[in-house]
Image (cartoon, one colour):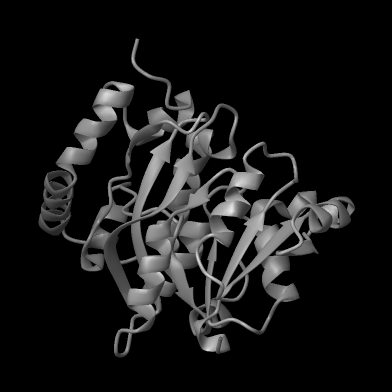
Length: 277
């Protein structure tokens, strides 16, 4: 397999997730053209390498650097031998639809640098909650972000190697939203985005996970959007963006309401997606 078509998948982990085996198995089932790298504390490297011999296990950047430091460490450890990049957390899953997205995106004439699809939210035990609301047309992304609306999720996003090399490291000053900073830097830099209506990943919600700290998430998102999208978008454009986003995602809002009650996505994260009483 030519390096231009090989996918680098990185999984940052402390080696303690009860779902790690399922995450690794899901990646292995996708394609022989995937290079799966696990980034973990130094003392866990030998144990995890023996446990997952088909992967490459590297040392992360230490506790102080967090999840995004672990991604940086993996990218530094494997600078060559791949043409596209994504990462998946140790309790989340890549789905067969991700392989379909890769195949379709790589073989388009002059494809965009970044592809994304649909993400499914699941509970700790794997039960389905709903699909994540998503903006299908990347043109509207800035208008949504400036209203505090997250238009897509990182799980299953596919980045071209040239984009990754240009962006460099994930910004570890952000503990929860460095992935937003990463892809928004690409967007602001003119890299093309393309949406595929495919279920590409599953995001597991559980009590105590980092993303349940929604107050910090909102603060980081506000700072990141202000840095990379400093020009204010007219109110009428933002209204149009919000209305079309709500309309196109109406079915997903209904799914979430049936599963979790009348909660926003932030409330769902904070509560661990507990079902309505």
